Image (cartoon, rainbow, N blue to C red; front, side, top):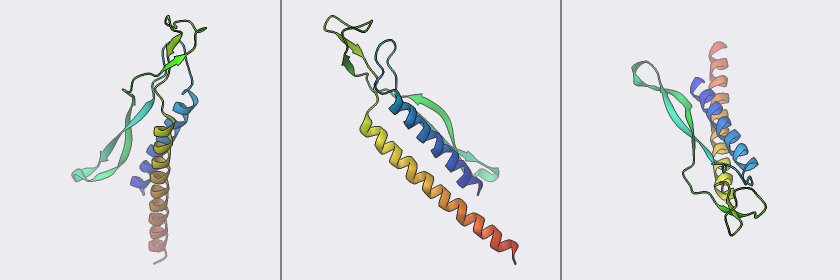
Amino acid sequence: MNAAATGLTAQRQWMNLVADNLANMNDVGGVPYRSLEPVLQAIYGAGGAVQGVAVARVAASAAPAKLVYAPGVAGANAAGYVPGSNVSMAVQMVDLLAAGRAYQAAATTFQAAKAENQAALQI
């Protein structure tokens, strides 16, 4: 149950990062917003067995910033372009689907383990 619970937490954090990325994808001016991605890490228990997963850190994407035409914004170049965010709607939607499916799988695993525990208590 603990492994499934850590999976639920990690996937929820990933979905929150996707939401943040989508909310900031149209920001222009100043420092351009960088897409955030979770870096997952296995949690090991006694004897080296994997006990779950956790978000080890959140990393900014290395994808280049997109140039956005915004001549009135401070920092625009001579042609009127400013660096914008590097968030791709397509990538974020795929990430959201992957995180959602992983969350659903972890929830199903948690429910199955819970049902097994309840059945064992009735013996």
